[in-house]
Structures are given as structure tokens and as C-alpha cells.
Image 1 (cartoon, rainbow, N blue to C red):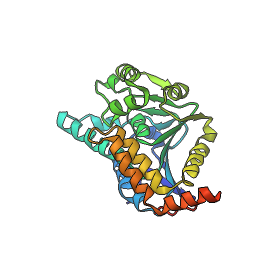
Image 2 (image 1 turned 90 degrees about the vertical axis):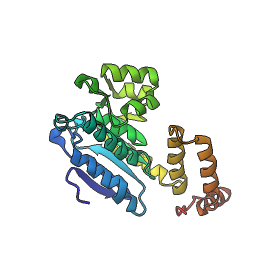
Image 3 (image 1 turned 30 degrees about the vertical axis):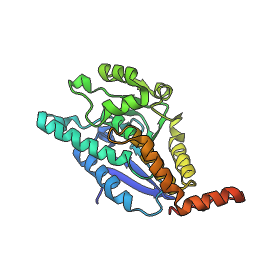
Length: 260
């Protein structure tokens, strides 16, 4: 599809996806959300030899400063529910994407921006990053999964506080709470994200996909995570990758995985 609000470039098998609405602090409008759907639901899935995706925002001020509030003004209960459902479905495409997706958070990650970052598998943050779910200031609540994923990362007690107060936390606090994996100077942010994906790219591709599936299964009320793990483990032991990995270990050499 054509992308107006996403700038996409490939670097050595890594897709660098930049939300490119800097003047609007990269706010998520409907067009941007549909472009994310097209990317993670179709185009990126079809890309061969993809190592992973790094998602970031244009400029130094914001990763994504929230949803585009101008589009909220004509919402009613039915339209609001429809918007939230669509947003959750799009972010689920990111959470279940079969290759690592890393949010490189530069500046504000608020509201929908925080929800977008939490839908990614990992998060690295610049020292000036700020996280928050300030929706209560507008008299609404998060709708793109924020109430659920924030609990997963920081626990019920702290999540409830942040959701009810709308307070922001800085990068160091986000790291202490377990919301982000690393905090770095802004000029080191993308390098760290690339480093992580290059490291995972040396592992078995099928195994990486199954890690994503089984970790997500823990939080899926319709899944038994242990049962999913048994099936996934069995699947991986029947792959060519496992035979190659085991042989490489015994022979003390680097494995040459094929993703089969």
C-alpha cells in the first residue's frame, strides 16, 4: 500500500518505520492507524528474510504524543467502541507479529503512543522519554489496550495509579518499573535497537516466532500457556533449524539457520 504518514526504509533486513507527523507530534490519526494495519497485517509479513522492525517517531520531541483528539469530537458510545475495537485489532497485529518489533521511544509516548509502544515486543527509550496514559484528563479511558498491557508490565497497583492520575513517568522510572528494556542517550537509541535485532537474527527464526506466540499465550484468557508451550516445543524439535542448531552446538560452530 502507499504510505503517507509512515516513512519506511530497510537496513540490512531490518525495517525502520518512522511515524512521520512531526508537526502533530506524530499523533495517531485514522490514516496512520490504517497504514500501521497495512504494514503489520500485510506488507511486512510478505517481506522475505526480515530480521525485525524498529518503530520510532519523527523528530526529537515525540515518539507518539497520543491519538489525534480532533477526530474524537464527533464520537458517541457506538463510534467510540468501534474506534477502540479497531485500534486494539491493529495493535494486536504488532504484538503477534512473527519477527521482533522494537519501539525506539524518543520523547513523549502518551495515550495511544504509550499503547503503541506497549504493543511492541521490546522497548528502548531515550533519556528524555516520557510515558503516560493521560486519557482521564479528557474524561475518557485508554481504548487501544492500555488498561490491560500496562498492568502486564508494571503490575496492578502501579498501573491503576498511573491510569487514574494520568501522571507521566520518565524513562528511568519506566525502566525501574519494567516498562522499558533500556534507557540510552538519544544518539544511541537506534543503534541499541539494531543491536538487539541483529542478535535475535542469529537465532533460530522458527524459535523466535514461537517465543512470541508462547509469551503472548500467557496473557490470552482463551489459551493455556503451558499447553501452547508443549505444542511449540514439539514443533521446534521437528524442524531443520533444530537439527542444524544441535549439530552446530556439538561441533562448536556457528549455526546456519534457514527458518525451516
